[in-house]
Length: 104
Image (cartoon, rainbow, N blue to C red; front, side):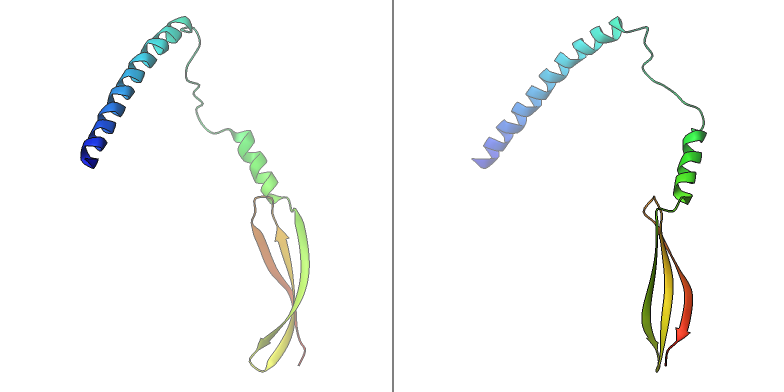
């Protein structure tokens, strides 16, 4: 029973899609004939260099700089590290240690 029901649904959907595809082809042909003077594809050869340069400049600009300190343990010694985190506009972060001082 389930197989028969599934087969009927599949056959119905195939018939419906063929009918809708046939209807679409006639409207596409009419619209193509009416707008024959307009180009359908716009082709650009090479890169858009202005956009590439602008994106590179924007990624160099710094959005925010945060300086933080933390105490870290290396073996039996404790150091105070000061590090700078730079947040860039493209979502990247740069972390750089500014100083490391031994506390004990």
